[in-house]
Image 1 (cartoon, rainbow, N blue to C red):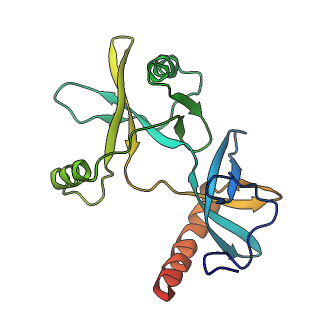
Image 2 (image 1 turned 60 degrees about the vertical axis):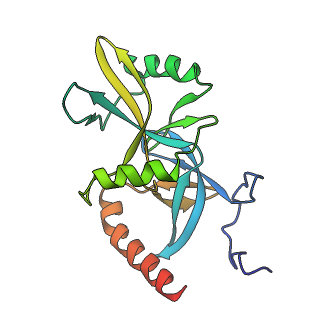
Length: 192
């Protein structure tokens, strides 16, 4: 066994075959799914909780106004006409918009941002609480400009293992386990 091999990998997890990193299919309360890489396994209260990152690139939809900060659109129906316009625009770049659990994602080959560009963005944003985004595409829908942005900070998903898949941890359960998961991860980092 190599030092990088987990001693107790979760059973029945499929592998993507590329880097042999386990993947887990997460389902939310609405039945939407999101394929994720398994980052951490955290046993709590007799359940196996997992920290995951999406296989596809997560994106956020913003409403764009002249001379104003872009406005994040938190909730959007999967059948929203704006997303149909986004589909067409992304197809021109050989990308596909996926209406998945937790977040919208984009599948396809994306250009990675240059590290120099990220440093410049960080200099402009002194607010520690705000996230940093990179514009992927912008488009017009009903005479309103929108943009799909890629969050540059890591995008993590918390789920509970059930059978060979996982269920998204939401609401009260998330509020109950999230601080404990963070404490466990901090402890592991301190030991590592």
